[in-house]
Image (tube, rainbow, N blue to C red; front, side):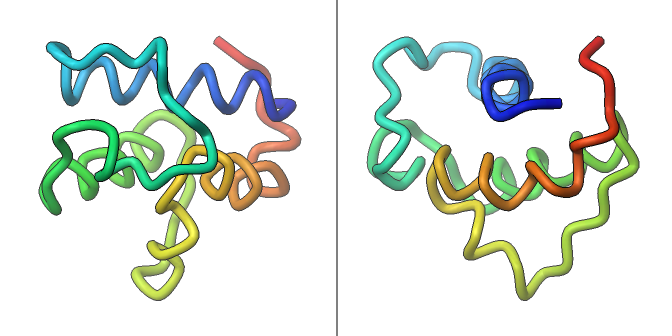
Length: 86
């Protein structure tokens, strides 16, 4: 997957987790929690969904890298480079 595909995958996961949020105006450089209603359980749901969909293991120490969309894409890009979008 390339960066744009990873971003779309994260948006798809977010739309399942917070279906009432408008994700169309999401600023990739701002923390998710400043823009949408995400609690710690929602955040863990994102991590678990990535594991379920793509078998990606994200160590708890790396969660800070997933604070923003830009950080999430940057972190996931090398891990998802060989995955074909569904």
